[in-house]
Image (cartoon, rainbow, N blue to C red; front, top):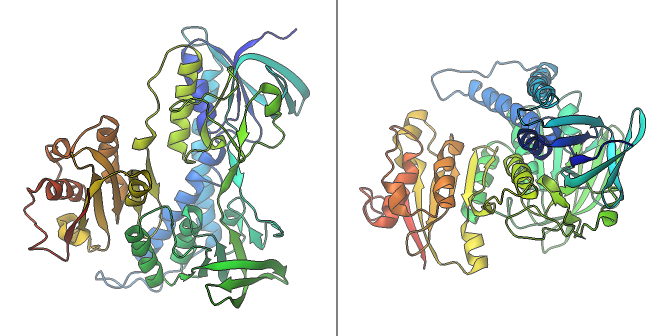
Length: 488
């Protein structure tokens, strides 16, 4: 009979590989079950591939500008060569993952080893996983199991996704040529990111359709409004309060019917392609979780203990997109490591989800950490916020890119709550604040950090000084560039 494993990991994406590496270091015998390819959506059809396209699109936008002392309007573009760059980036990252897994396949100093098992795994008993792989079925028994199978694009009832004209994020990066027109259903992160990409290459008319009154509803209205205004300048047309009535293949394109706003007017469009960007759902189908005693609530694995990855089954943990928290690769990796430390008795500190950070690859870039005003209001959390427009910052002036702002939130006692930055290099501003939030730090701690000059991060420090009353740029003198919001 096959030797029992200390840990079986279902899924070899960011969470699964991070967990495997941690267990390897701890000297554990691990079976890592990978259904398709290692890396998951952290590489292809997700985090890396779309960001590569975004960077290429933004390079193209900058090269075509005519207000910087040059005129780049005559540039040509080859979509096959652009997507070849994307594939090259993914291949490079995949080589790194393969090197990781090759290393994990060798015994660690403490005797840990990770065995790769190719195929789709499912519970067939409380602690037995059956893997349907290329060499036939195989049963794996383990003391502990980590479910980290990731997510898949959500679809809509009655919509036939053919992968050629009606697309999800699994297909849109693989179109043979840039479509003349693209209708995007859903104005969350995925929809707005691909709107930015395809509009950026300048050959596609992009239209966003969303049921809500504004794009990016999870962010504050000022963030949403800044991005919507930028989208308008880029030629992206937003249809708010648009209820999709019909979407179907029509010849070599698609036909879209939507009912608009309170008027109920029916709106029809014929488009080259349509992208369903209505979120992602945990890929839990056929895992047999009920046999292990794992609770699933509203399509996601329920967490049994806040700040951990434990499930209702004492031998099963869950990490990454399979749970109900935010679907981010960095969160998945942290959860994978935390789960392993927890299951093998190391008593790690609870995961601080309040300090999780994110980058949204729009035009302009958006970076976020901690609470925003909407979340504070929903939780009954009093706060004060300072907003610094980029037009005040020397680095933004030097970049000739002064659209956007920095918004810092703090509790009435000065404890840091959250940060939102909209504009170029936004992502460079959030990590320090994420660390301070995790440590329970205050405005004074942030103010005392010496920031480089000139840098966009100086906007964060200036926001702190506004809330402390020590700013050299008070609202009375700069009403168009700085402001304070008091909800204490």
